[in-house]
Length: 186
Image 1 (cartoon, rainbow, N blue to C red):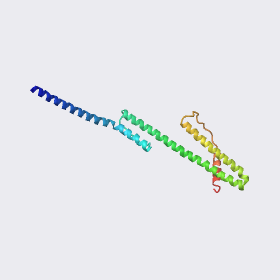
Image 2: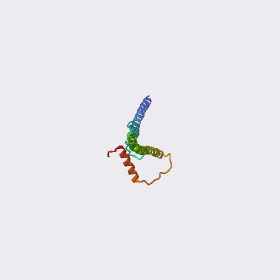
Image 3: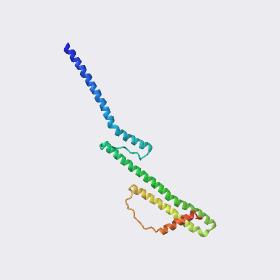
């Protein structure tokens, strides 16, 4: 009886010690797992923030060279490439808007001049009609160029770009004529 009581006590102690050991191991495992998942949480938080705000300038701090560190570095590189692409796209839209605004204003100016010449100066009507057609053709060329740039950027066209000489005198004369058409008093 005495031996059985002692064995039951020892069994109870062993069960309590084993349960305590398991609880301590589980607690330490939880702490270690949470610490190991901090970089994953940072990566997730940054991706969610980028998705919500569309702010491509956000980056993830990387301090380690393990797999998660390499993943964060790759993610930062991808964000930088997307940011540059977005900047280039915005610049293209701004440039296209600027480039198309000039011939559009010229077309409007020449259309007004054509209307005025048709009523008051028929001898200049043909000159203004030719300028109107030239500006419309210029807008068409600009749109074709924009389409070509978009295709080149998307790698749909494999033709290399060619360079050509430009007659600056002719270019300046054309710009001056276009300016005179929309601002005849200057």
